[in-house]
Length: 113
Length: 115
Image (tube, rainbow over all chains, first blue to last red):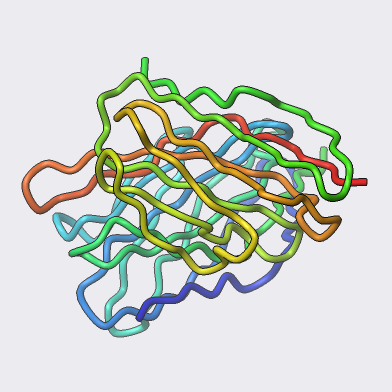
């Protein structure tokens, strides 16, 4: 079984501030982990993914995430928020041997000028 | 560029109507998925398919069926639409290489309103 918990359905930061979006997962096998971003009226697109090669994963638009097995976490960070980062972010986990992904409930990021 | 195309961005249907949502991908991906997205509930998997003519139930298949007659096309069918099926529907595809399955590629979504 697999599940994802995203802490905080809404996060608000000032432009230039650190972005931290939290994700904890549960998986019975070593997981594949993903962060996706959804801009208004669009589908989801991949931000970054963890596939066991390296624990610190860098993605597009300056985002990165660190896989911490002991904490079962895969938090998303960006050192300096930009107005264009305002979107909804989804963490997802996938069992290694199956194609189904389980998504968290999503976190809406607001960036204040 | 990878592309997943959903036939309708916005649909309005009446209760009891049969509804078809079409999805086409041009990446020769083996796997295709239909998700439903509702505020505060994230994405929930309705059905998925690993190959032509194969389908498996996801987490919320009740009230839905699917069809995959060709590799590139995956259709979601609401046999008799109900108001609680008003939602955003997202189609996605992914590839499998050996034992590894890649990330999901999504269409732009179909927003269905059932009156």
